[in-house]
Amino acid sequence: MSRFRARAFLFPASIFLCFSLVLIPEAFAQSQGESTRSAVAGPVYDSTREVVLSGTISEVVARPKAGLPLGLHLMLETTQGRVDVHLGPYAGRIATQRGLVPGATIQVTGMTMHFSAGDVFLARTIVVGNQTLTIRNQNGMPIRTAPAGTRAASGASPEGGL
Image 1 (spheres, rainbow, N blue to C red):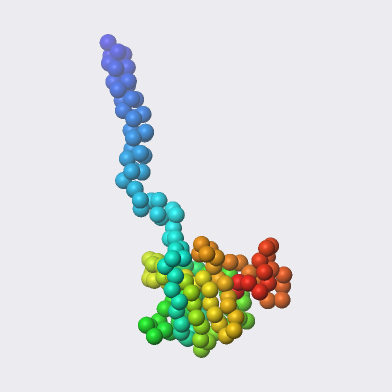
Image 2: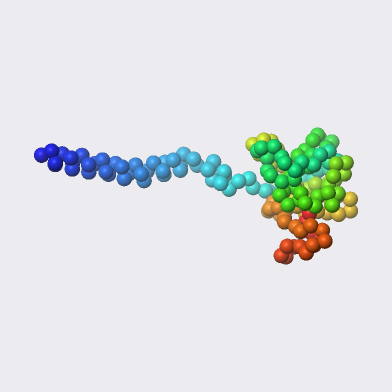
């Protein structure tokens, strides 16, 4: 009789365990909802929200504070105040050659995006002097370019990008 009770107890317990393993992850996924999907997808560049800023570079920052996107940042003094302009991970090598130095007056097209450490203006194009530098494509993806005097990476024009 004790053997029968043991089997009778194990059967409902094993079914409960199986349902728990199936239902708990599903309930957890539903409770995460939209926040999980947006965290995985990340921020989205929206070219319809682009604006143009003009100002003077006050500082060039190669290592931004934690919570900001990696890559070169320009601190731009505008009539509305100081703006952190992000140039992406590829601009650091040739920014000085292209005139992106403190004291330079530039015009930047892009959009502001919020990060955990603050707002950052994601530059898509920069006009410095008589040259236009393309930093990102229409979808906001940074454009990788070769330094001046070298052949550009596959398909990119030598004059394009930064």
